[in-house]
Length: 108
Image (cartoon, rainbow, N blue to C red; front, side):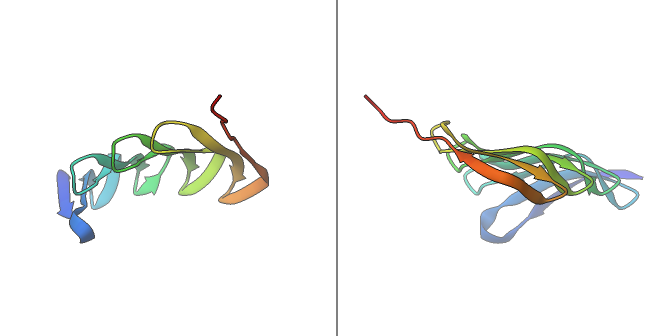
C-alpha cells in the first residue's frame, strides 16, 4: 500500500515523501520553516540513491552530492548562499578521497 507522508519536524521543518509498504519510495523533501526546500533526494526501498541537493534558507543551492546505497560517492560540491562554488571533493563509500579543492574568487 502506498501513501503520501507529511511530517512536522523540529524547528518548523517539514518533510514530505511517499511510502510504499512502510518504506520511503521516490522523491524525499525537507523544507525550511520559510517554505524553501532544504533537502531534495530520492529513495528506493527506504535506501537513499541518486543526487542529493541541499539548499540554503534563501533557496540557493548549498550542497550537491551523489548517494549510492545511503553512502556519499563521487563529486561533493559546496556553494555559498549566492551560488558561488567554493569546495569540490571526491567521496567513495562515505569517505573523502584525497584533498578538497577550495575555490576562491577574488573580485577586481
